[in-house]
Length: 617
Image (cartoon, rainbow, N blue to C red; front, side, top):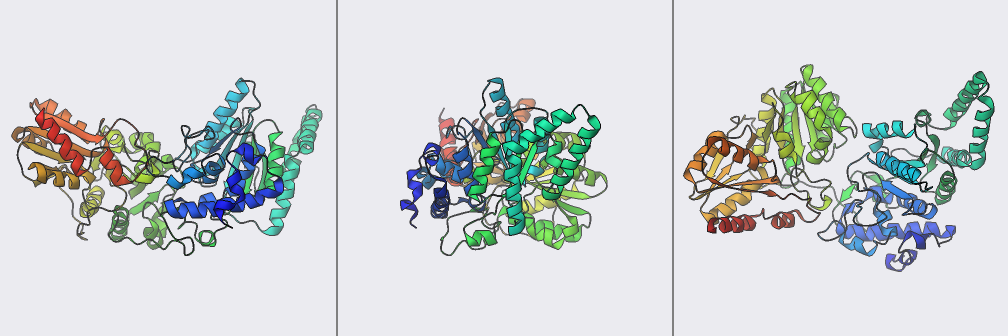
């Protein structure tokens, strides 16, 4: 079927969807999958999770009165079918490109995007807030949180469940469980029971019996125990009922008849409801079904042949970290690796295979990851926490209170520092230098190339204090890597070029464009290496011999490395002009990484232009 001539072309909003007959919905699901395969293979994006959420997206918009009923897609990796059904089908051609629609839900993009997401496990909290708001307004509108089994591991999800159980708001939590299979017999039984337990008769009978038995406490207790025992035999757990939810499921998340019937019944029930659906990542595209991890996030590919295993020539910074970690583990038996559910993205696959007893994936639980690391460090181990810059933000208190305050030797390998391109502002590491620099006891390094990255990681393990090495996504300048382990002099930068009038003090990824601009300006260029402790001697030397100091960083200019330079010059009282270049005080939208750097004036041409303007003033 040609996706451009399918049933999908008649759907421009959920209102159109609700005009379809139920027997047309499977055809629509097939049309959406065909359209997504054609679209994502051209633009790239999140693949397997979206293919697994097609029927659920259709059923939710078919049953609920969106946008008055609000759907919050946790993380948002699975929101493409939702976007397609809510008037953005044509816009998918520019998905994640500059000026195009975002890869995650965004309130400014559509009234159907009830809440902006990108980080995991926030949906239940947000949906509860919306459900309580509806209750206060006297409205019967529903709030629905769709959360994955991985996101359910985060503490904030359980905090929200605990709070929601004490309220009587019309909240529906849908657990999209895509990590287990449904055998046909168990699936059929659970589908039937889910319909039964979500129906009015069961709910009404339960309430009536509770009223009658309330006057006979022993009988009420016996009845509750009997119900829990029976439901415990035919459903996975009574955990969510202990939180105060009416638990329903698990049901087949690809059976539209079951989904529509169950959601229709649930919509009539008051109070907090919990629906457990089981789906398959990559559903409908065999290659993604077989390897959903490979098809989690993809670049453009040929739909007929699929994507190939990624090669890393030249090596990415993530690969440099991965190789270093394995090499270091061979030398240091106390070294352990920790990740909050980012094994592949953070480069821990080989380490997990070589050292399974020293590898810890703690789930989507950044706060726990850091305090867990603190406990290991306090017991004499050398933990390395591999984490994205944007996710480290979620554990800031643990970083300060549990690690830095106690001066524990935890190494932070901070990936995706700076701009990240197509994933946009939710995943950009724009702030880590600013929020890390003010923390006592913490050493911060930023490599300018792959070899510096390796040596900095080794240096970090030898300091016996908290230390962060932050590096960007993707490849560097393809520097030759010295596989020997060498410690760098603490707090010392390197003068890479000697010039006149202007000195460019570059941090990390901006050393290369600084060198390029420095050639045109005949400027001095320093690879500062350390953000904290910063090289005071080098700063003073350059300030006393140059007319203008220019700081360069792929981080928010507010409070970042450039601020450290300015603070020290102010302390010295040296009358030297300082120009701080970095990310502006705004969220940088998604797009090509090189294009975004140009937009921010942080490529060689932009640096050159800005400095020349300043010199002419």
